[in-house]
Image (cartoon, rainbow, N blue to C red; front, side, top):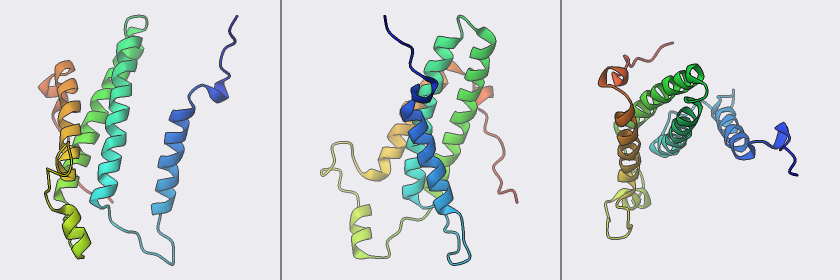
Length: 155
């Protein structure tokens, strides 16, 4: 006889990921001593990886939830599409940020040396991840569902 996992221990990795995001958000909050820093490419790359992992999780949850609970499955599928739109916007923002070439080390790190990495230059990793996730979403949604919303900085 197996016992059920207590709710406190049901999904420790998801809770740890959420705690990491909350910690990072608090760390980026401005204080009187330090002004807020704008996003850089590294932050957006890591955030994009997090969003695509969530995208995969929502996809699987929607698939397994829909047959026994169609209404809940539709909501999860809708969240899946909305998350894809957010992921696309983060990917676009990544490419609009300048590459930091202030130092020789930064210039060397951002230089394209595909022979050094089996998956290609680091700047392409986000694109490869985005294309892979894009294939999944395009098989399951219509172009109308994927139409991007207007992007604007709202204050």
